[in-house]
Image 1 (cartoon, protein in one colour):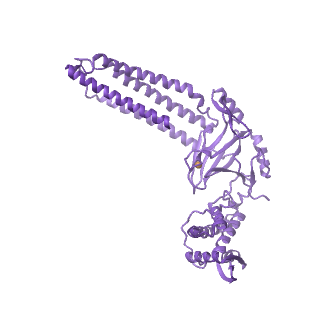
Image 2 (spheres, rainbow, N blue to C red):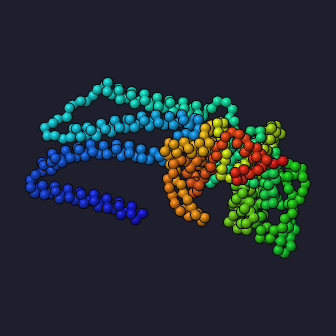
Image 3 (spheres, protein in one colour):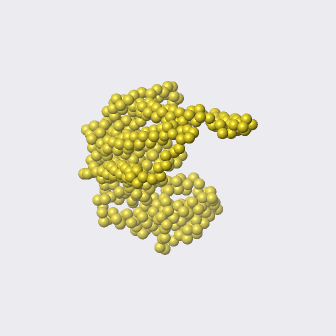
Amino acid sequence: MGLVLTIIISVLLVGVAFAKILQAKELVDDLKDQESEFITRAEIKTNALGLLVFVIVMFVLLIAQIVAWNKYMLPSSASVHGEEIDTLMNVTNILILFVFFITQALLFWFGYKYYFRKGRKAYWYPHNNSLELAWTIVPATVLILLITYGMSTWGKIMNPEGEPDVHIEFVSEQFKWTARYAGKDNKLGEASFALYGKNALGIATEKSIKDRLNECYKMVVELVDIDSTKTDSTHITVFGKNHWENVVFGSNDQITKSYSVEEFERLTKVSKLLGYSPEKQIVFDGLRLDSLNYEGLISEDWNRSGNLDVVESSLKNYRANILRLKRMQKDYEKNPQKYDNGKDDIVISGNRIVIPKGKTIKFQLRSKDVIHSAYFPHFRAQMNTVPGMKTYFTFEPKETNQEFFDKAAEEGKVYMHITRDDEGNILSKEERLGSTGYVLVCNKICGASHYNMKMFIDVVEPEEFDQYLNDLTFGNETKSIPVSVFEKD
Ligand SMILES: [Cu+2]
């Protein structure tokens, strides 16, 4: 910081000094009565030459940078559709550079060629229709062609033909990715944010809906649904009647819970705040459910009165959630198959995922909090993950990790090889031919640890993938990837 500041101040001071010198020269010229010769012919010529030198140095530096730093660019695409994106990119870049070199060369050449000479007059050339037409139509045509080319490529990539071979889901949240394989049936089960909680991806099955309902009932009932109390000097025992469960399951169980007098006062206050009555029609406003945080809050911070409004809004969320879950239960009765798909889904909670080479893979993307973006740079694939909706991207990887590494090395690309000691301190860094390998990273600034949202991808031969998936189906951990089959029998 200090160095940057020093440089800025130095540049400013040099500028001021230069202006002062010019001013002094002007004054001296005034004294000598030489006003017309303030800028001499030699100086004008030097300036004109300066323009020429500048443009040449700029071109040379530009080309030198493209050549010298090309090794840091991404290796050529590792997916089938990515080749088309690479071609599109190259065509666009070549066109842009071509126009750039011609226009800049002309601009600076004219600056040099027509520098001021005494007695020479500019040629008066006010208008030319053909020229006007030419420099409107030519760039317009080139742009239209380029845009059409880009849009048709995009259309082709986004509308792949045929059924995908493999379905995988990625769910983003601040600040990690969780992945899910479709399991034996190769169908990803339904999911809903109403089920988030212990069920990290909110996978909807008959059982998970019921479990989540019970969790929500418990939270609401425990806090608000109070029928009668029995008091001793320091504790109040509450006999709550579980109205929600009565409605749905026809159970008539009483719940019993003991609170301190202080806790109980808060509890009744919350009930009053809510005007809670399960018999009344419930109006809800679809607030975001943050159940995990809330559950933590209940157990730890319940006695802090400042949290009452948090408790209140969370309770509203629970009630809204219960209505959503009940709707899902009704839907289950109509389409049970839809809710069976998720049972054998495999949830990957590590930071590495395996996909097969030469198969079409359809990624389904969801987000739990803010907008993130799933970016697979080596596959030339990127798609936003948006809370409340699903997005998709289909592609076919064409090289295994080793093949990709070898290709990158052949193309002269480098990666930073870092050696560390046992404590993680960096011992040495060196550039080596090859590539760091496939990654999924977040490409939207989504918060403080955005940079850390990363998942590694292994591309393997199809047979190896089948074996891997088979192992996963039985809940085995392969390649040290923590994994769970959603509803293991
Ligand atoms: Cu992110």
